Image 1: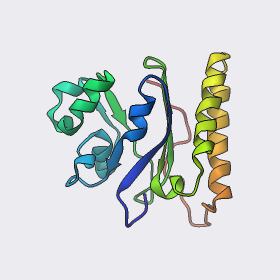
Image 2: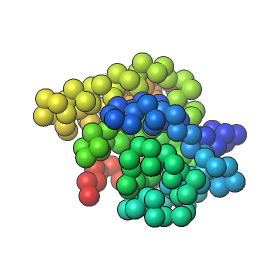
Image 3: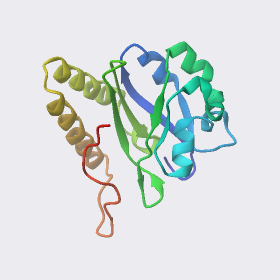
Image 4: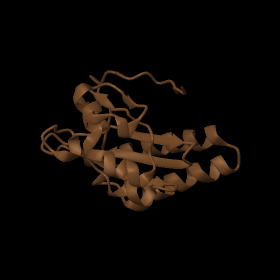
Length: 170
């Protein structure tokens, strides 16, 4: 997210609700409807937010219709922060729903061509189908790093690694 913009973009998705996912607008602002869901809350609180029964949770009421139409029962949002700013790319894979999403902050998504994100999602899917889940995820993460470097998102000497580098599966 850029300082003058509070919108995140879903830049690539695959699976039964891919078309719907690509239409989602997420804001960091609680005053905007787009900021009244899990992602907006996660951005503001700087913590992971999980809802086990989406339609029963009134705090995400603004997104109940989308959850109903997509058949979503539960969800999670995980902000990627560095020095207090959303700056990253999140790869979300749900084996239960058979979905893959790549979510980038708007500053990144504005300078990366859509075909790059689509290619990344397809690579993950191909590897999953071949039983090479870890290889697919690892390749996507490495490609994200390459894209960031290609587009001038450079690590500076004073950068601090604020996030753990491990994979969490729960």
